[in-house]
Length: 82
Image 1 (cartoon, rainbow, N blue to C red):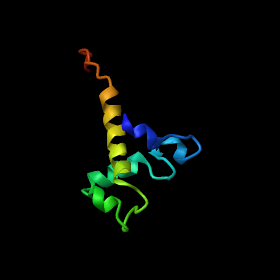
Image 2: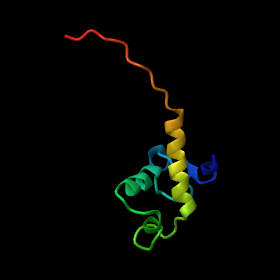
Image 3: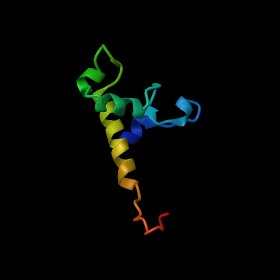
């Protein structure tokens, strides 16, 4: 869990959403940019967030991966339908 040095959550910043430490850039925003097809190099470019490092973007991805890894899935029982 290398992301722990880069990702923090503070209820006073961005309503407690996980952010890149020392910024107001949320993990959610980084993932959203990536899903739009914006590359890591573009995200850290002058056009977007030049103060971010590649390691910050990868930390956001790792954070999301660990959340999904911890997710519990329970099978649905046959519920009666109307």
